[in-house]
Image: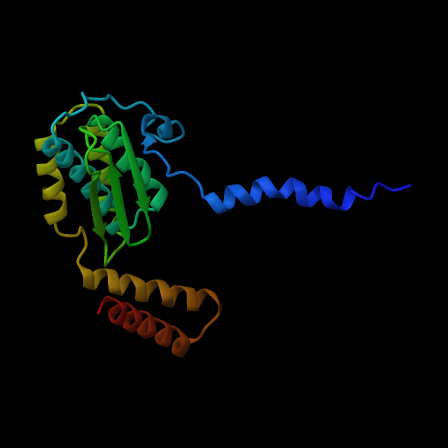
Length: 212
């Protein structure tokens, strides 16, 4: 004879799950930074002493966020930006942070040393481009920060200089490069003179419209 209580058993097992969902999950603690760097190129940064003053902690957090902002502007992936921001913050003595990165924004939040209001830094990247020369220079700066070759003031000054430097190639040359690439693809696919010309002109117009 079948057990009449068997249909109720799955529902009984689900009740604790429902109760946990209704209560909600606890707020996550800030992430231990060094543990999150195990599988990145910055797995072993040299960590400075943790700053005790709120102003100094905020200054180091701002430097970390500005590094991530420039990486996003240069076309770096969100994973590369996150590992670079965490590496810089960890090497500057910031033990725990929450880092949230999208394609256009970067949010970093950490606890205050005295247990007060958390410190928050936000950057929104409204425009981005692929600038691999500047991208490589920023990664070199990150390497020197995490090896303690630069202090906070020197790192901030070099970062400002990288932000002000012009592009390696002028914008009009990049536009012509897109046109040449489109024309080459059209020729590779067997297009005639008209198709190649249309591809070149279309690529140039699309690039200029997108730039505008």
